[in-house]
Length: 100
Image 1 (cartoon, rainbow, N blue to C red):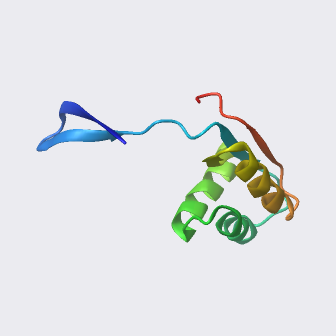
Image 2: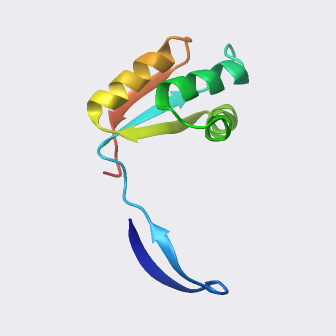
Image 3: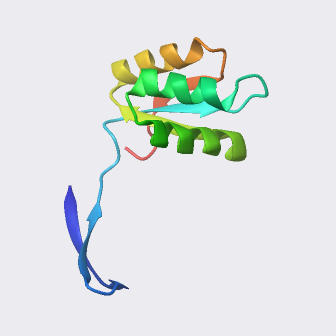
């Protein structure tokens, strides 16, 4: 993780973390009118190992924005994650990360 000075951003805070993009691939999940919040949260936790809170935030984004990048990793890992998520019938794809 790289640290940059950010004067004036928050009083008393002199440094903020700047993260690099993931290692090359992303998993994007798309909204549908079939799956429930509970189903999507559950499968995201299983597939990505994220917390319930993170899965709930991503599920909200899927519902409200139509899609959400839910995982960043290498190609093999993203393909595996997308296969697990697809088991509930929701649209998902693993693609090269355009920010990498």
